[in-house]
Image 1 (cartoon, rainbow over the protein chains, first blue to last red):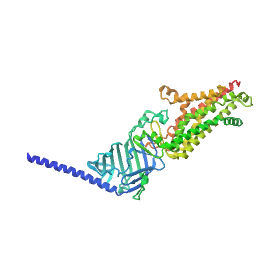
Image 2 (image 1 turned 90 degrees about the horizontal axis):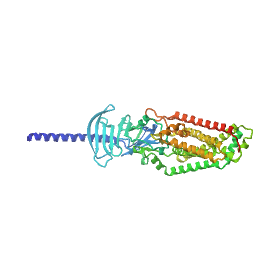
Image 3 (image 1 turned 30 degrees about the horizontal axis):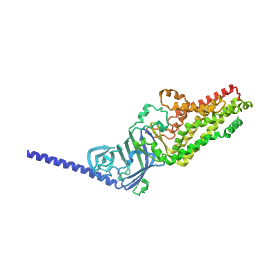
Image 4 (image 1 turned 180 degrees about the vertical axis):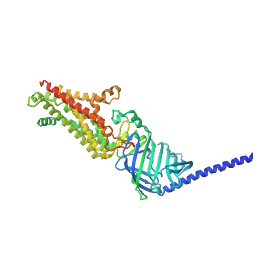
Length: 233
Length: 291
């Protein structure tokens, strides 16, 4: 009996440490990804932004994207209005793993866009953190984040997909797709002053899509050349 | 005909009453522009409040194009009342002064006489709208600058690119001319039936107010008659500010979402103008002028 108990205790002990070491492995992987991201102090990127929200008709516009460590991020549309998900959730990767105090747990493997990835769950230790959970899909061999799903307290769940090309050495994507949840849109007629409502029910239903997407396709990056802080104000 | 038209225009622009509309429009536009210049951000936040639940709109929402749209929404409901002041006075004013009988003793046909008066009222209407365009569009562009237009509709929002807007205003003002000439034609028609100006002016205003209320109320029984009311079609200028999207939900530059509606409304307004003017000619030809 005692022998059996010892065996069970030993098994649990080994199992516990194997789990811990596994979690430790994910932390080190996240740290490696972060270290690669840290190669970029700042960048100015040019690209095209497309906002795809069911109840918004918007054109594709040229944008300039500014980033500066640790988490300053700004999207400016060339002479125009830009529509972005609320909360200013930066469409960049540094914001995903900027937390210092987190637990990184492995959640298996997955294939994203033809690449094998490790699924890593990032849990912030700080209870006051806006982020509740981040799931990262990390291409271990290239240390690139291919996909991220972030659940926040105030602004719902966001999903980001990254597609890499010539700037992969800096962990900078050629294309980012940012998906988010939207709420129903309905404006009172007293504000719009539009009293005729001849839109069919089918079209109205289509306009009630709950998912929105912002897609940025980058054409060029200027990396580590310095950016003035005033741009982010 | 040209001489007749010149005479009628001279008569219109000699009267102080003519300038009331220009002064009223100037005062209204400048007060709205001042308000938006001072508190534009608050207004933009109010307008985009519903959208801000899940999105943030960055950029210069309050710009000259947007301000002009707000002004047109507000003013094109009230401008008909100002037009009625002149158009509904065209025949009844002459009758009131006792000059109508004298006028038709001249060697001109009654049709020519009526058409000259109607064209003069139309020119006044067009000049009023040009003044409106100068203040609401060009002055707003000067004060607020230009940028993309972000419009909130009942069920969706539309963003129109800066370079794709100006022609829409040209079209919208052209359409507004048609709508306001319809009002002028109505006032002109009603002015046949009175020997003082007050009656036709009030009658025109009443018809417009009554029809506008019917056009704006979403009650099923009224929906049946709405397509037959010219006031329903007068607001179709807004169609210029809605764009088509492609399969990827991207706006297509230079398009109008519902051009058919715009053409249909234009034709209905033209039909009303023809109807009112023809009826005016018919009534006036048959009229026993005693004043």
